[in-house]
Length: 386
Image 1: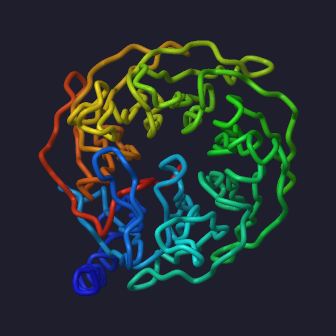
Image 2 (image 1 turned 90 degrees about the horizontal axis):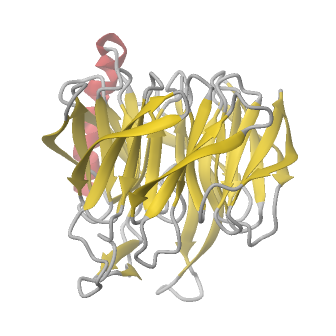
Image 3 (image 1 turned 180 degrees about the horizontal axis):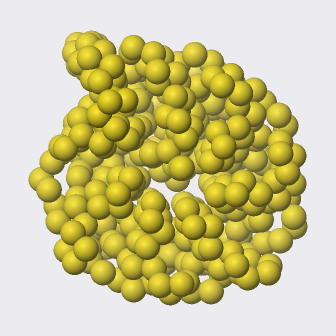
């Protein structure tokens, strides 16, 4: 791992220097080395190498790795545990789990938010801040001045201000109890509203934002079993949420939330397959990409096992979804991200420790065959929301 990181970092020196002139779009992959999947069971790795953060330039064709650095991370929680500022100068990474110091064969909740300066050569963690218990999804507003972190084990959302490269805590908002499972929080393009998924009690909570003041409106919505990943369209007119279900082999769903309605409400739910983890709206707000585990994380003798996950693509018409295409992906796959032109789709795979690159031609979803190796299981991927 040390040798691999050194080579990638050396390459990153030259590549990052060229990135602004090459119209780079950065993608960050958080890679978890603490766990592996062994025939359907998640096992803690003894004496595991450090988790890593891989930075990829999606503006290059084909995409290129710019750098890879040691950093914290975790596969626990939605695959949205990293966020980039709109100017791509910082990445924020939540650390949900750590090795239990009392028992190295187990994990326990962490409470850290890492600030990574992406303008340095190589990128580096420049600050470590305290969150609530077991931080998971994180999002940054379009102005790059506010970040919200969902804390899975204490029912809260942590608030952080961003001024230049300085990130500072600005309070915590309680929206449920410790069992509510606050999983991810996504911010509207105008910065005035946020939606927080709660997989512990099957709710989606509406938050109001005024500057650095964040309040729980007490408006909750119900979409499906265990709402988890959630994303608001760049148009601001709708949101989508992945309902991961109970993991018992049943087909699970995604739902559409109408944000033009007053108050916002769930208006459509469609079936996508077993355990949709990653979900993202395209930059042009016309597509929704969903990564579905499809039983690829189950034991091979399970009647619900499948030897691949799925990338499923939908067209958005108002608040209605029409399925366009699907393609097989790897095992125990997690996040999904779009390029800025909405044509490239990247999927992170935990077992393969790779990012798979797909192309949407407007009529066909094509596997390009490109496999980008990363230093651990790709647990979360993200580009900047602009």
